[in-house]
Image (cartoon, rainbow, N blue to C red; front, side, top):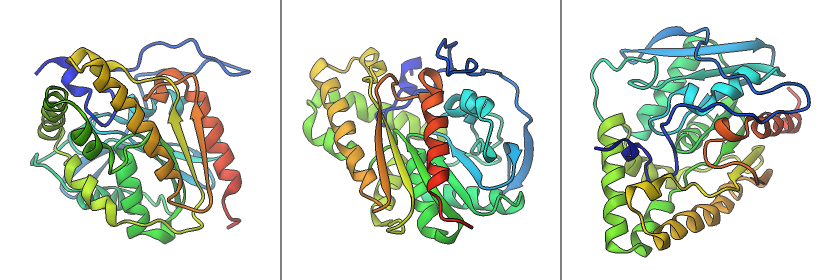
Length: 288
């Protein structure tokens, strides 16, 4: 399978972060291949994780399908200067983590992995920051452990009606390409997108849970290299943008912002907007 096969239908990229020139008022975003990785044995696997900072709240970064924590969040992690303690991790078989017995896992298994990691390292009550497919994990986690989730910052996340809409609306040729890419990603990264898509339909967030939805403003065009037609790419973008409103509607205490100058991987193009929105979300949290 060609390298672009990693660029799956849910709108994510497994390409390593590229140098950026975007700056905030003080300094350029930091990109470093090194983090202070630590390891925990979770459900029989060696899971890599890293935390920085101190105090409350704990913030947990949840990467997209097939993406390491560094791919989804490396610059964001390195450039964040508080408040709170910022943590990220690689799911089994991705990045620095090891998968003892690789097999496709369900959404509940991915949630259990995160919960066991959190318990093992005393992360406690947390703000979740999921990217792409990580949105499914965050939503399922928030339903299963509602008292442990303080808020969620959704970063251009997948929505459960997205792939079904593409299947119904794309040409047979375009859908065959999408279906092939999606199947390859599931086989390669052992995370069942289609099962997660259906499982998350039954989840609900607390109606007052503070959430922010940050959506891309620049089309994500990498899948054009796989041979998707222009009409198919138009559908791919239109449906993704249309469904972001459904993510925002998951809570009555929500905010939706479009990142006008960023595509799907904010870490590559605009880490600062993520940091800004994270700080604003923390200000909205109920006093502990």
